[in-house]
Length: 282
Image (cartoon, rainbow, N blue to C red; front, top):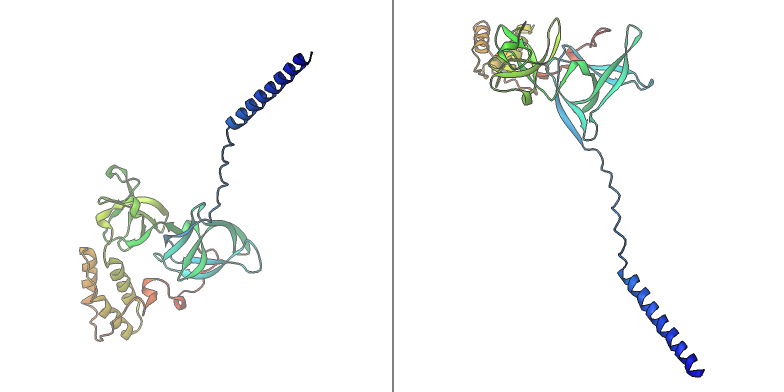
């Protein structure tokens, strides 16, 4: 009987040892939990500035009303062709907002684009500005508009010589230039003209000086502008002819050199010469 009891004890001990070893093996073979992916780090939107061009003359820059939320008030007038910088964010694109402006005591809802001009913040109506564009000028008569960059898409609408346009370089080539322009009858966006009819180099400056000379009321100023004009050349026959025609009429008698810094009104905005537009203006 003792032998039988001892044998049972040994069998029980052996079974316990085997079970313990089996459990240990199973525990050792269990895979470790997979690492959890780290939570994504939220990045701040990146601000960039897109080149933009004012299309209307005069155009209007607005600022939010300090006392009434959702209302824009006129702040400054600008010329057609004025270069602006549009706020654009990496996550949402160009910054816009819907706001109201007052026209004859009536609130009119409009879409505005946030822009920077001369280091200050403004808002401008989206219909009066071309984005991702640069200013230029038409330097040929009978410059017809094309709907596409295709000779077969020519329209009956032409743009006068000297018209300020906004050029989209990314959509232009050596044959056709993509432009936006405001005419007396209609505003055209992303239409085309022949590249040979678009200015280059100093053409915009030359035509701006010619216009300023023709409008100058004082002889001294007119002579100074003419002296400045003499320093600019053009590869455009039409622009050169306009310059020559004017130079033969106005003889400069002073040696003053005019630059963009000394006469900003010729090249952009002259605040003293830009009254607030009438109600209903852009």
